[in-house]
Image 1 (tube, rainbow, N blue to C red):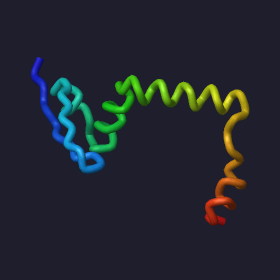
Image 2: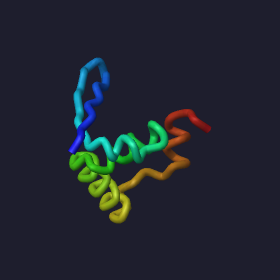
Image 3: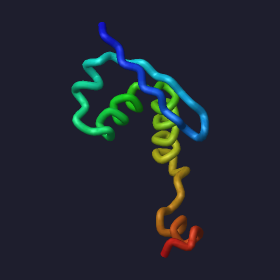
Length: 73
């Protein structure tokens, strides 16, 4: 399997990732490639699951109240 390596500068840290060439070729935009890579990140998936469970339990913050607290309207 042919792999490509992408070097990304994230928060002033250099990270290197490798993934199958087919993933790179299938993505038509940078956003699609990013979505594909993020959807395979176990830490992100775990955070999203926890956030969903918090939302189900009613632990979320009301959007209107949050906007007001942040002086966004």
